[in-house]
Every structure is written in structure tokens, then in C-alpha cells.
Amino acid sequence: MKLINHDQVLKKMSPRKWKNSVFKGLFMLATAFALVVLAILLYRIITQGIGYLDWQFLQSLPSRDPEQAGIKTALIGTIWLMGVVAPVTLILGVGTAIYLEEYASKNKFTSLIQINISNLAGVPSIVFGLLGLTVFVRALTLGTSVLAAGLTMSLLVLPIIIVASQEAIRSVPMELREASFGMGANKWQTIVRVVMPAALPGILTGAILALSRAIGETAPLVVLGLPLFLAFLPQSVFDMFTVLPMQIYNWTSRPQEEFHAVAAGGIIVLLVMLIVMNSIAVLIRNKFQKRY
Amino acid sequence: MNIQQEEKAFSVQELIQQKKSKSKNKLKSEKIVPVILLLTAIVSVLTTIGIVVTLFVETTTFFSHVSIKEFFTAQKWYPFSETQGSYGILPLISGTLKVALIAAVVAVPIGLAVAIFLSEYASDRTRRVIKPILEVLAGVPTIVYGFFALTFVTPVLREMIPSLQIFNALSPGIVIGIMITPMIASLSEDAMSSVPKVMKEGAYALGATKLEVAIKIVIPAAISGIVASIVLAISRAIGETMIVAVAGGSTPNLSFDVTSSIQTMTAYIVQVSQGDAGYGTTIYYSIYAVGFTLFIFTLFMNMLAQFISKRFREEY
Image (cartoon, each protein chain N blue to C red):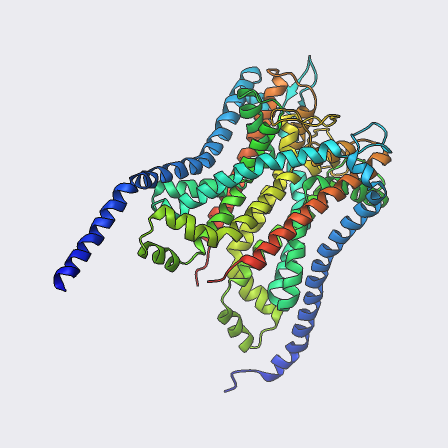
């Protein structure tokens, strides 16, 4: 009795191989498409905006005349925003991660916090804007200040840094902690002197990624009511301000072609900032991350 | 000798006692620290409660101006008229779903193809180059995609479809699709690479081609992760704001037409926030009602994704 009909197998062989190659081509094509789109996006923005990029563009205030318009207020505003978001998210994010990984007992409450964090990561950013508008802008009467916007953004990016810090802390081996306890250190000393230094690269990488998300977001700030056009610089965290994405949004939504080119110039500055930050994150991850 | 040793042992104990009394403050910190850390952890819970309470309270105020029945059944969203204002959410929902559907049509096939290519066909080196580039695509700020949609995709589409309006559903839909493609690709790839190698090798030993292994072994085994990634990506598309605010227009209408101007739930919130809708007006409260609807949509999708990935996960 023949178990396999060899003629049949041979006959089917070539269409099967052929189908495999065709689909391999299709899959490659799809991948190439994604890469090409990224290339077109960057090419378009650079060719449109590079003409506006000069020292004066970085140093000028926004203007009704595209030739004189600059991004000084927006750039300084973005740096102010980072100044609020970075410490707030670091303290809250790392604190939460240490609590969940080192202190929390495995009970319903802990898993509630954990589920809550992953759900929070899926809430649309514009909803955080509505929260900020009610709580920070109106109830705490902070207005459209650096502080109100910074706190709103901090809540938005908190899940990113919490998850990254948790992973970093979890990857520190138990032996290190036990060695520290064995030497007579208490829990907090162990966390501060053993766990944190070992987890720091992972935490910093997460923090930078969270921060780069915060400076690229626009929607919640629009809802808070940040001015699209501002000709003075903030002097404290209670002052009005605007940020790069808001300025880009303002220029993009104008009908004149010239302003689109100015917007492209602003986008280049924003992308350069993001690329620098992400490169630092990758550098930290590759250089300092220890594998145990 | 013996006595000396005993003395020493005693002195060590004494030292410990001394140290302990000295470090009483430290012991106190040992008790306070967990409480402080717990407080930071509670901030994220408070954020969720804050979102739900804020949306709920302001939406309730909105429903004291506008009836719930009108909100869910009226066919028109026309809030800016003093005399015949109409608050029917359906046109905004239809705009949102139209854009999300177009995005899914673009992103699901491309994202899955990329995922299959990376997990089954690509060499390790290719994968290490392409994955970070896709991550760049995912990290581009949405306002940049909005700019791209308005200044590049729309003009190109208008060359092909002359009847296309400047603001339409098609262009932002396609661009959102491009934006969520890396998300589907990378999450699905993760699911596919966690399929045990022995299963694939079993199929290869029986003479299967790579395509057959991908379609008959890998995809069925990773299906929960793949479907969850698609649901999550569509939820992102529904909540996406800046691309539709820049390129989608501000004309809420209830139709299947993708060539004319639309308005999504998110774009409406942006439009009102930019204008000077006075605090306490019906229009002001309407953004919370729309935001609440949006929140429920995305919450449902996210929970669905979690349910799928838990319920249908194949454990190996």
C-alpha cells in the first residue's frame, strides 16, 4: 500500500513553491511601503522647511509675516513644559514602580492598580485634556499656565514611565537584593543602594521616551486652551505659554502656502529634538544596561 | 580564651543594640516610605477616577440642557445655532467610524504583512534594522502626520479623484492607517515570534513551505495576540485627534461619503476648545458629553483587546 502518492506531491510542488515566492514578494512590498512612506514624509518636510531654518528662525517671535516668523516662544515653552513634566513623572512614575514591584503584596488592590495603569495608557490623549481643563485650569484656577499643562501631560505619560521602570526593577536579580539583606541592610537601603543603581538605565530610557511623547502631543493642550499665537516668554510656571506642536498646528491650519513651509521648519526642529532624545535613550540602553 | 570569646559576642550584641537605638529614625523611615510610595501609586488610580467623575458630572449638566433622547437619536449635530441648535451625536460617530474604518483597511493588511515578513521571512539582521525604523514611524508626533495628510496626501488624492474636497475623510483615514501600521506590525510580530519553534520545525519537516507555516501554524497559534493588536490599533484610530482636526474638516454629516468634509468626535472637541465657547454654555458642556462617548468607545475596545488576548491565548 502506498501511503504517499508521489505523482500528486510532485504535481503540487511547483504551485506551492510559486505561491510561497509570490507572497514573500507581497510581504516584502508591504514592508518596503512602510519604509517608503517614512522616507517621503521626511523628504517632503525637509525640502519644504529647510529654507526657513536658520538662526533667525529659532530666535524670532511668531509673526503675521511668514518671512519673519520664528519659533522662539514655542521652543522656550517646550523647554518649560519639559521642566515640569520631567520631575513630576520621574517622582510619581518611579515611586509607583517601586511600590508595585518591591512593597505591594499580591492582592486585589495591587492588581487593580496594575489594570488601571494599562487601561490609562489606552485613554485618548484628548480626554486627558478634558480632565486637565476641569481640574487644573478651572478647579485649581491655574489657567493655561505651564504648571496646568505640565501636570496634565505628566498624567498622560505616567503609564509609559511606570511600565518601563517596573520592567527595569523586575530585571534586577533577587540575588543582589538578598546579598544586600544578608549584609544587614534594610529594605529601603537595599532599594536605594542596590536596586535603583542597577535599574537606572532602564528607568532613564523610559523617562526619556515618556518625555519625548509629552513634547510631541498637541491635542490635550488645545483642549486646555493654550494660545496658538503668543509673543512673550513665560517667566514662571504660572505664566501663559505655547509649545512647538501648537505653533506647528497654528501654521498648518492657515490657508497660505508660505505658512505651511514655516510649519515644516518648525516640524524639523521638533523632529530633531525627538531624534536627539531617542538617540540618548538608545545610547543609555546599549551602553549601561547590564544583563544579569 | 573561652571567657574572652563570650565577652566579644556580648559586645557585638551590645553594638547591635546601640546601633538599633541610634537608627530608630531609620526604622521610622522604613515605615513611612511604603506609605509615600503607595500615595504615588494612588495618583494613577485618582487620574482614572478624575477622568470618569469629570466626564460624568459635566455630561450630566449637559443632559439638563439637552435631552438624552435627542443626543442619541437626532440626525444632526449643529450646536452653533442659537435658535435651532441640534445635538445628535450620530453624525460625529459616523465621521469617527468612517475614518477608523479607512485606517483599518490600510493598516490591517500592511501591518500583518510586515509582521509575517519580519517574523517568518526576514533574517535576524534585516529584522534588527527594520524594527527600529518602524518604531520611528510610530514615534512621529501626530501633528506631523496631520501636516503630511493636508499638504501631501490630500493633493495627491485630489489628482486621482477630482471630486475630492480639500477636507475629507479619505486622506486622514489613510494617514491614521499609516500611523497605526507599526503598532499592528510590532505587536503581531511579538505574538508570532512567541510561537514555539518546535511547532514550526515540525511543519517544515513535513515539507511545508514558509507561507504554509505562516498561515497554517503561526497565525492560528498567535491569533489572540494578532486580533488584540488590531483592536488596540483601531481604538487608537478612534481617539486620534490632530490628524482629523487638520485634514478632516468640521462638517459633521451622517453619510457613507468619504470624499467630503466630515467631523469626528475628537475634531469637534478641538474646534470648540479653540473657539471662545463661554464657560457654562451648552456648547461648553457638549464637549464633555462627546468626550464621554469617545471614552466609552475606546474603553470598550481596550477591554475587548484585553479579553481576547486573555481568553483565547494558546499556552505552550
